[in-house]
Amino acid sequence: MVVSSAPGKVYLFGEHAVVYGEPAVPCAIERRAQVTAEERDDDRIRVRAEDLSLDGFTVEYGSASDAAPDVDVAESLVEAGMGYVDAAVEQARDAADAPEAGFDITVESEIPLGGGLGSSAAVAVAGIDAGARELGVELSTEEIAERAYRAELAVQDGEASRADTFCSATGGAVRVEGDDCRAIEAPALPLVIGFDGGAGDTGELVAGVRALREEYDFAADTVSGIGDLVRRGERALADGDLEELGRLMDFNHGLLEALGVSSRSLDNMVWAARDADALGAKLTGAGGGGCIVALDPSDGTETALKFTPGCEDAFRAELDTEGVRVEDR
Ligand code: MEV
Image 1 (cartoon, rainbow, N blue to C red):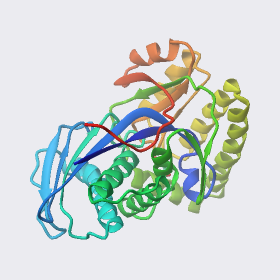
Image 2: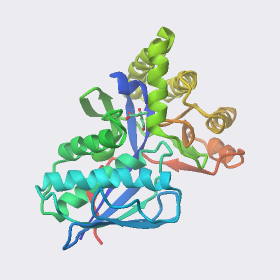
Image 3: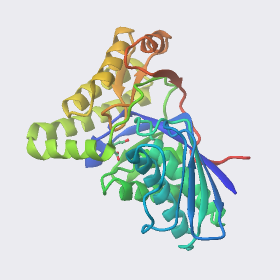
């Protein structure tokens, strides 16, 4: 039995635009998904999910031809959680050249599913590491990131950047531009997260931005404007200029809002943070619902978010410098 974990992340800048080759800067945070993989003596997969921000469930299946899992939660949520586990298992089998390997998998996650904190990437990264190790193969961090990216591509119909999976595999702050992924230095960041209890459909939101970008030149300009903003953000990060970082986060939220990926609850939380004198605030991840990230060294934003209608949870998040790792059990 092997237990691996990988961190979630927030986007300081650049989600959505990164899908079109613009740079993005995600940062890993100290909230992890943990995957336990135990090889079975048949070719079946049994998955137990503990906290994917929905009621726990267990499903067992043997092959794609098996009937849909008989479980007691909304099928779309099961599919969302299962898709990434399934794709991770495929990658682990492929890495170990063991296409028939069966597993008992347990997923325990502190990261809300679909909430913009990279839950699916963390599950894919930890799942590939645990599954491959259980089959006797130790993959490099780069290979785990590459395989997790392929797993996301498979689940998201070919619409994914390397940002979430690379960041979760390596930890820390990273810069991603197309295939170029690298670690970058970041100062201590006073990050505060607000979560509305909801989730967006990444595939649908990415497709929506694609459609706008194809229809309107000014939407395409908005996407490349986000790229310009990220380049400025990188400089602010290197200079440790938190005030400029905050201003750029506010701007980035406005551009994402224009691209149709915000929501009333995300906007409410962003405004609550601004009213509480946060240095800046923006949605993080695909949007549509889920989380915002604010920059605030004081307690103001966290307190304000706790009293904001529609905000279900507010917490401080530390940068996690450690990526995928094996856990002792
Ligand atoms: C989702 O967490 C981030 C998006 O940019 C999609 C991606 O990069 O794969 C919306």
